[in-house]
Image (tube, rainbow, N blue to C red):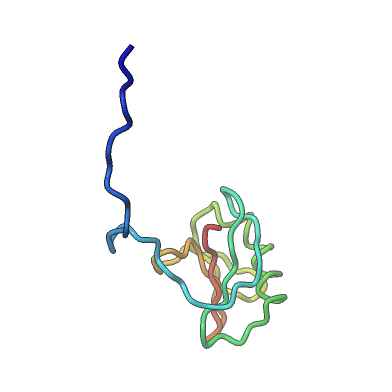
Length: 102
């Protein structure tokens, strides 16, 4: 009985730039629940909000995120993000943190 071999494919060495996952810099604070599962909370560079404060707002905003509209949460403006790779964001003055798929 003949044996059919596996296809001989070249090894993947890189992902095209337009298909690569975006890199978002900042301080990772932990996870919160989003509409479709866990999200990573990241404080963006230049922000002075603490991780505990960001997580408090993130936990309050998580259930509202599915609405897809701007929300006022504990003095923060939270809503959809225009940053590639960031699902949503919260901002208060010059402080900003975002939500990334985990």
